[in-house]
Structure formats: C-alpha cells, structure tokens
Image (cartoon, rainbow, N blue to C red; front, side, top):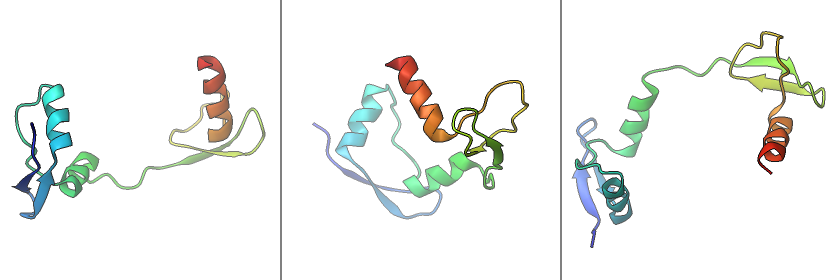
Length: 94
C-alpha cells in the first residue's frame, strides 16, 4: 500500500527517504502531514541547542559503587547505580 518517498529537508535541503514503514506508522498515529525535516535535523531541533547534560555522582545505596545521575541527589531518598536500579525495577515488575 505504501511506497518509499524521497522528500527534501526544509532545514538543510538534503533529500531523505520517507519509508513505507514510517508512512504506515504516521498513519497509525493519525498524522496527516509528511515530515519536513530529515532525521538529523529533527534530532538537532529536538535537542534545541541544549549542551551536554550535567551529571552528578553519588554512592549507590545497594552496592556502594559510584552512581552517575542526571539530577542532584538531595539525600532524602536512596540513590542507586544503573545496574541496581534495573534489578529493583525488574523485581517490582516481575
């Protein structure tokens, strides 16, 4: 039903392919307009010129390893490294 289309990015002017799969996805979400930007320009626009995310360090409450966090821990709640956090989430959903 859908066929790949070649579109031109309104941001950088380069051609990009709007695949049949992407078209089907857009239709399933009720989107009526085709994308106007290539993936690279869409991603750049999404990030909105934000610089790298500031990361904070803390000690994991479970294993004692250093944990890198995208927020500043306040000390009122336990903080976990990514491995321990994943185990806890798995146990909760398991």
